[in-house]
Image 1 (cartoon, rainbow, N blue to C red):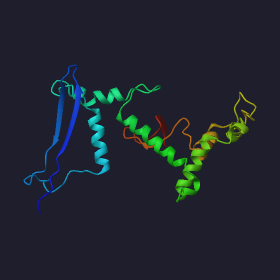
Image 2: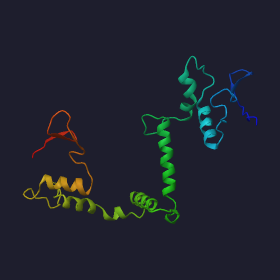
Image 3: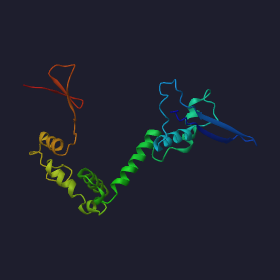
Image 4: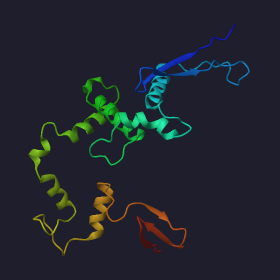
Length: 210
């Protein structure tokens, strides 16, 4: 059976400032039988077509790639994607991250009954807890913070039960690390390769004792 040959012809017109339009023709050559991939057809599903269109929309055909390949490849992308407010830099990875965040947001804002797994429902509950849609956190005010201060021994600048005679750093750090997973003062632990019998705790040296 003869191999079906696909030829993609894309014609881009640009106005060079004169009455004559400059025509740019890009061809995708057909697969040849002698090529290693000669039996493989071009990817023409919607994902490949979308990726190809995004690449074509980034190309500036008015620039000679032999003179300025970066301009040829990226000028149109830069023109169509200005740096958003609040961002110092912007690129394809930043845009992709923003798009993913929007997708996740749209998923999490669906009704809870539409989720099939407990993991999805837990993610929605976690998301809604951050929104505080019913203003529950506003009603609680400073109470959660005050309760936390009481659990870790208080704070001397507040009325939270601080007593220097009873307060110990070890007990406070234990509560913060073990219960709240808060890396206070130090975080990770690994054996030192430079000093035998020593461990690095988040950049702080702590000697090991028998």
